[in-house]
Image 1: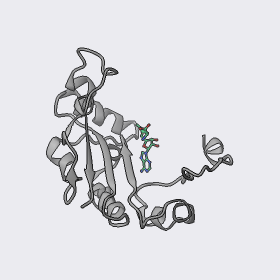
Image 2: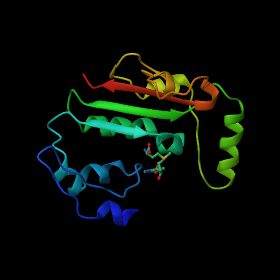
Image 3: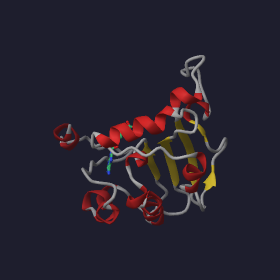
Length: 160
Ligand SMILES: C[S@@+](CC[C@H](N)C(=O)[O-])C[C@H]1O[C@@H](n2cnc3c(N)ncnc32)[C@H](O)[C@@H]1O
């Protein structure tokens, strides 16, 4: 996978790509990485996608501080796009997360209030915090899909 990610890519007038193999808990190293600085112009708004990643971090990893550090590095007008597992709709989810933890994979569902805190200081884009399949659903959402089946919050925020 890394070999493919690092394979030479063709840049276009539309933009450039780069791939960093990094642990998000080492956020300072990510922000200092030459590949990042050479690829993204952090004087212009960027979109920061953290899709299904932060629930792998424990509270002791300070996920809120990590998001804050990333947002501090980007200018006004940038967006944060976040999804995160939750046990709000499925009491079994906490038990499953604990079972995975025993097998060495830390998984920490967070509730709606905890999820919403990641967006402190940002303007939430309509419709705000929703279970993922309810955030501007389109025809691809299967009929009858339940909040418990999805068990993941999603939202988009704009840095003012
Ligand atoms: C459920 S996948 C989501 C991948 C991708 N964002 C997507 O939506 O397809 C979770 C990803 O988080 C990555 N991950 C877990 N802990 C991480 C960490 N501490 N730093 C960076 N990535 C991490 C895993 O390697 C995995 O690729």
